Image (cartoon, rainbow, N blue to C red; front, side, top):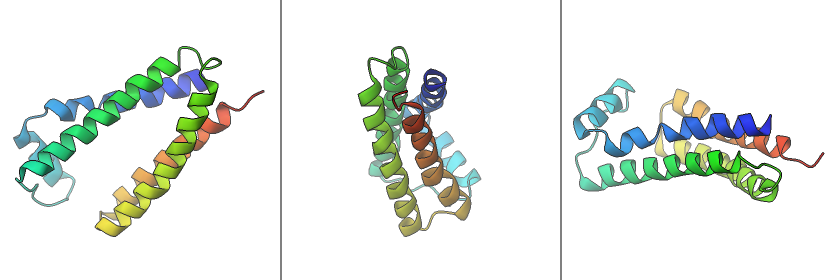
Length: 126
């Protein structure tokens, strides 16, 4: 179960690589479709969106790698899962502070924490 959970999350994270190469115009259109307003045109916005997406994508690569030997990498998996639980809480806080839409707030941080908790639970020694 742990192997498949890591692979599912890893594959989902790989989708973030799309945003790394996404045309700016498409990025702006998606931003507006999500009712987040007009995407600022400042270079830092594109930089942050693309580099954050790149790190999400490489997180997916790491999870796929770890899923190939969950026994050998159990401690790393548990550590990353604990980081994910903490990150879920931090993301929830950031989303609230930044005033993101309620659907985003309820989806992003809590889902991150729940998935990480599932990984942590599945990675316990049996």
